[in-house]
Image 1 (cartoon, rainbow, N blue to C red):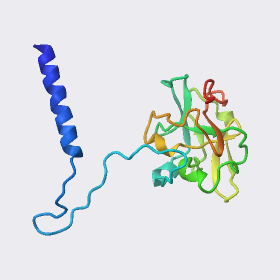
Image 2 (spheres, rainbow, N blue to C red):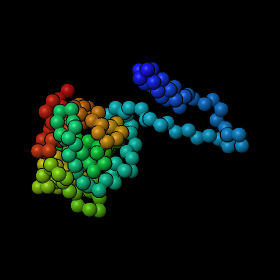
Image 3 (cartoon, rainbow, N blue to C red):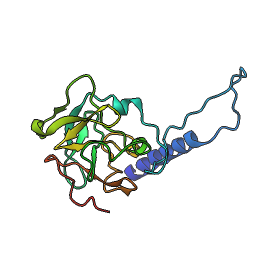
Length: 183
């Protein structure tokens, strides 16, 4: 009986999901006004795609937090729970510029000074001036970046990515590259 209810519930949820994904071929409302549709789930991005950083990605308050549930252990995240990454060899923000910033938006300083949450060392939090004049948050002298393809809190799709800009790593609470991030 319990399995039947669970199966029925799951089937109904799948049907609703598929119905929501169905494309409407009629692009007008009954009053003749055009319908504007927006995809509810963005496609996954790769570092070579052009990705428009969201305004929220650069408007974080500058607070760093510790995410305890990482696959390789705890890692540094922003105050919204988005994973933060370091680019191997980048110490001044110049390792990621131009097209790189579309896939790897930097964590920029807002009006308030960046802070470290519980489990992180406040002495390791600082900022640097990027070549474009913006101020970027660093942790243990590593400029911090988000990965645009993560699309939300707790996502770590950028972990271990190796692209034309270099090797990307999640940042440990000690401010080092997370072990096992080498591709």
